[in-house]
Length: 398
Image (cartoon, rainbow, N blue to C red; front, side, top):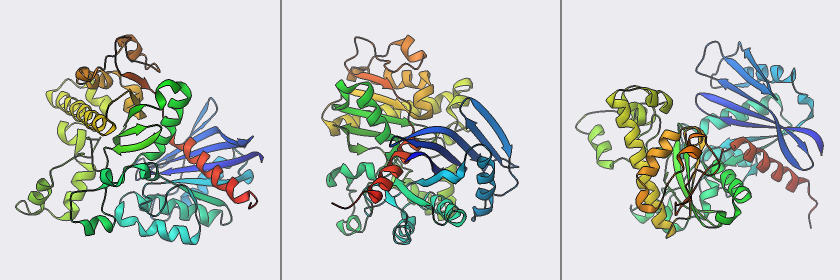
């Protein structure tokens, strides 16, 4: 299998990220990346091929059926890459429930199972499904796989995953699942390569982006996470609230007379950093804004993250290392500093110069906890999982 291409699709509500990988020597190597931003009009394909970048206008629309739009995207990509050599495609799927424990080939049977989990992720699952349908329509014989954000957390104990609700509901699947698993799997592997002395210890990884969560890892395995049943849980995010007293929801639905649809829209799109600040859900804008509301949103973000790190350390029975990743975690020294200030009691101390330049290790020599910054790469993880499923299928039975 030499110089074949593999595509990855990371579909969200506002964008689709496409990775283009060359498969040479049994490992996928990224040779290009593309993003379609559904929030712009006309739609644009942002393409990066090596050092070159292209902005390509699209005429299609991002409706429920993406086949026409993706046909146009494929034609544009085909002017830069030989898509005739594409042998497989991997998709990020948010929810695998208790049905999937790893990546799978997307067949009629497995797709039906993915679809059956839509109620567990009503805003995210349909995005992946419409992308899978579009690619199947355009390339009906292309080998496709699904990689799940939840399966990395299958190693958590039943006790950690359990909610304090009647047992019958737990047995029906209402439990803590955890998300961002592809990111955590990649970062855990990168930590093992870059800092093997601490990778087998007790580690908390902070995936801080527009969606944000934390994961407690021991010996490379997930033991606990901030997100639970849904992607609304845990720490505040760009537009999502994180942990919320259930009584608040009852109050919205009862005395305040809000509909389920209104509450859902508020929780997913109007809360978090945006809700607290009233300015923006983008941490970059809040950092540069001098108003009190912006500072309060930043302080609340840091407070909740530090508190969750303490909780996860309790699950692990200690803490050896803290790793920051994703857009905010990798690129915002101020946020890392604010979080670390609240963890001095735990023995976290940063090296200011290393933190300012986003170095691999940003903890000081005096810090009892090693603190690292490691860029995540979900598309690389999807590509590797896709290839592993393809190779297993091609491997002769023993």
